[in-house]
Image (cartoon, rainbow, N blue to C red; front, side):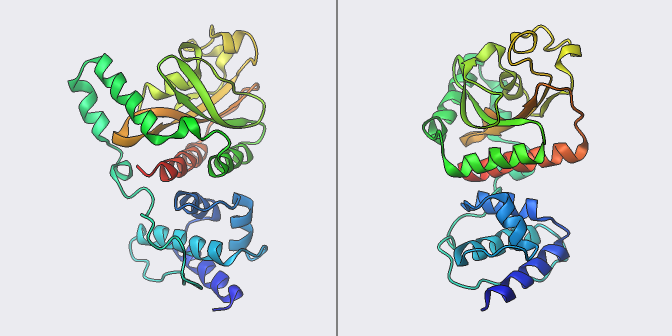
Amino acid sequence: MKAVTQQWLTQQVLADVGADPFEAWVVYVGLGGTADGVVVDGYLNGLLPARAEDRDLIARAVNVLAEETPGTGTRAPSGVQSAWADREEPFASWSTYGISPADLIAPLVSARRAELLRLESLERTGLLRCVGEDQVDAITAEAARRFPGCSSSLALITRDRQVITSISGTIGTDGPRGTSFCHRTVGDAQPFVVTDAALDPRVSSNPLVTGGPRIRFYAGYPVRGPGGWRIGSLCVMSDEPRGFSPADARTLELLAASVQGLIGV
């Protein structure tokens, strides 16, 4: 099949689904794709070429979206046999339904036992050893692009530290767990959002607000490891106050889902 034909047919299925290239890129990364969001966006809009293996993986990502959309019968075609054909589809697990084994277990065990299970989950992901991983860096770079003026990072919460494994921008460093904003994100199943930290009593006295880097805006979405334990946060932050719309919440959720796809839980 000619590349231009495959591109056009994939674009048509994406339009039928009612999704956008960003959503396709998120699933594509979850399947193991490594191209930047700009490349996938350009390809799906007919502006940029893509390698044969990426064309197939983008088509497969679009088909995942199509399968999740009732009444969509068309599918994007495969131009060549993809090396990813046997990969498990992303998000096809408990994370799709918003509840995890950890959510059920945590209330039944001691806080100490729950924390040990959470730390074990973090270790099993291998993310602490993946500093500079291209696919994770692509996600944080896309997050910074989607939130102009913000830095973005993937922060993991160990027993007593925040460890940044990927960052795009100037705000975000390793530090004590207790003062990190991402520690608060891990403490709840919902996103943790601060639109103006100087005025928010939850964090206004935090040294990251009163001193450098003088965080004003923060939004973090929890990232889960095996068993559904919250192990870290994909977050965006700025030294200027900023609003956070429902569309922003959906964007951050999708980006965190792409990290989940890489973890495979």
